[in-house]
Image 1: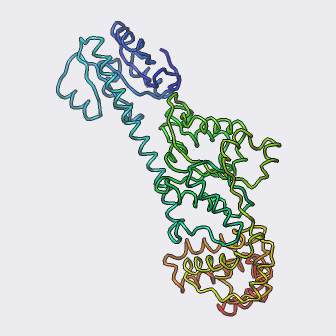
Image 2 (image 1 turned 90 degrees about the horizontal axis):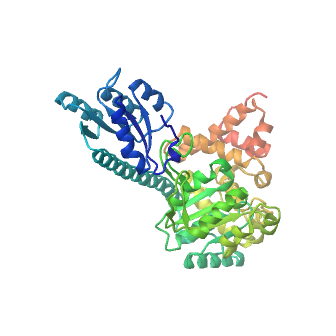
Image 3 (image 1 turned 90 degrees about the vertical axis):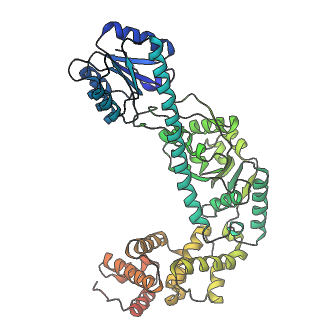
Length: 485
């Protein structure tokens, strides 16, 4: 018995032969082994069962008459364990009940003794071709499924905003950024987006995609920091069945899914150096090879990468390979931080107010000139993300907001917690999102936070990013019972 891992076979096909006739077994091996197939053998179903516990097989060749259980019963067990296994049954007779039974369990081929060696080889080749077609079909379905998943995500992002207006601003810094982005979109070149955290690097990548000839093709976002180094190659380039433990089916990688479209590699400098070398090879050769496969798959993918690190420092300290940087950064796009484009603040405010008013079905109170002047004087170290979170709070709680509340919202470190709390309340407790339910959600949020801190209004106010008087105003307006501290 020769038992080898599937990925070690010459042509990726493992065959299990169950035959108690020594002469017949030798003839089968003489037919199949010269063709490069790896064949495991057993003289009984009991012995074969031990093999299928340890290996994955593509084709089963079994005689009907075996010691112990018969070949058709064993074939049925194999089909239960491996639904995609192909079965050849060898029989010295062809009684109708056995044939019907074999067909019911999915036997693919019958060989009646005596048969010629060529007949065995032809039957195997037919089933190998059938398996290849099925694998290609499953791979295509997997790719289409992933494409649909990513495309649905992009549709949700674009539902409320025109693709030509996803970047808000009229400042010189933003105009330059969009001019560079238009060049990248027009000439189909790879590019590096640089900018502080929260400046909107993914939004710029979406803008490039939306305004390029690839706009109707996939847009795939990859957070490189979130992929484990051990899974990076399989996730990015795909893998074949049997490539590693648990790889029971072939899977398309993200580059394969992004073919003809654009892939956005966020936090590129977080990829381990060894994986950066593999990525460089893909960009240079314009093809990928799935883990566990020798087949090259040609790809046509525009690559946009992003980092908030200083490029020179990243290269010097080994976070980014210089050759990879030069392969990707045919053009650098620099997004200015919000503090350097304060003249865009009112446009951004109007955009986010419209978005959150529509999302939560509320009407934000008018922003006073005094408050707007205050907002323009802030550093906004969290950039657009921080400002967006501020406007969300203003839309939800601005009616009761004092100057102290506004200051707290700008400087609060709890804004993410507040957003997560509110979004979870909307998601799990309400469906339609009408005005009355939004008010109920706000009331429920305040009550939950008060309960969390056992009625301690100071702690609750801090958690919500409100001043103490601001919380009291909300509690009074909503008639929320003041719990005992």
